[in-house]
Length: 410
Image 1 (cartoon, one colour):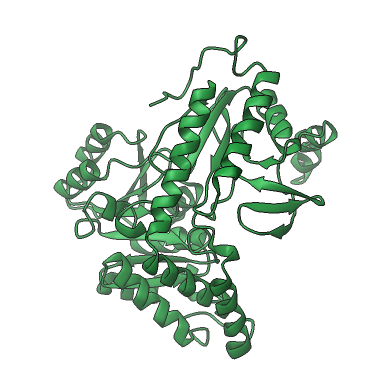
Image 2 (cartoon, helix red, strand yellow):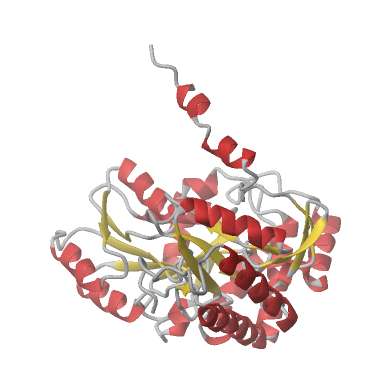
């Protein structure tokens, strides 16, 4: 008789990496000042956070969360559908809809739930959901949930609009169709070819849903995201996102036509059967939105910091994947090399994210670095210095450096 737990006891890879002192995950942060955090009793420069505008440490954001707790308490004690809606939820939905240029917005408790709750509620039996092969796990799982409801789930090659058209061409014309894509892909920072995607999708009668988790506050006019970046807000049917990055909080949202948002309010189990976002979370997101509206120069500074690091790391000889966003991946190759490099960077006072398979393709392990508007030049120069020393020690740059290969460096 098979034991369900056998695989759990046989999984020892994480223990082996911990024993080598190379385990980069679940490191508890003891103090967070934004660009600098305290981990294991010492300060390190944070170069792996999605706190893109640095607002988690902003006094106005923290004060808003405190005031909300004092006024509303710590939780809402119910779902949005029943007793869990407070006036702050409605205010944030209204303000965010105005900011993004949509008729309406619906809040969810997490960004992950937003993808699950939106896709599975819209795409039902006989419908098709079409997804980029490199979409975020939350999108893929939302598509799988729709498939469990007897929808058809199809993928197209990454950011390949010719392949998307080939897929759409073979779907019955009278079937409901939803094309889902990341706006900014979270691993590489690459931006979707939205003009072509919208044109192809609408030509075949498909609606478009863009996940702007890594785009709002990063690209577009004043940080309004992917559709704004391309001037296609009116043509992009739905945009979803999260509050856990730019908005310095927790939760998610989907923006679109009022009638579609109204339908989701009454048909999305992820909304109806989940506790609503807490007062502190909503108030913090509202305060962050206000700061973004009042200080669009933060977006300019964010991209300037990321561009400085892209150029600096490439000049040192690292294999850098170039994009116009806040994400700057440094491609290393082998898993062991990536883990050792991560440890050297950490010991040098810099925290980055080590991405290894299956999160990336085989032999494509990388340091996924990401930057904040609040990084100062001195922080960035220290990061470059630590990368240079570690890279030379490992032969990743300098005379012993291998020829870059794998993901194309653009």
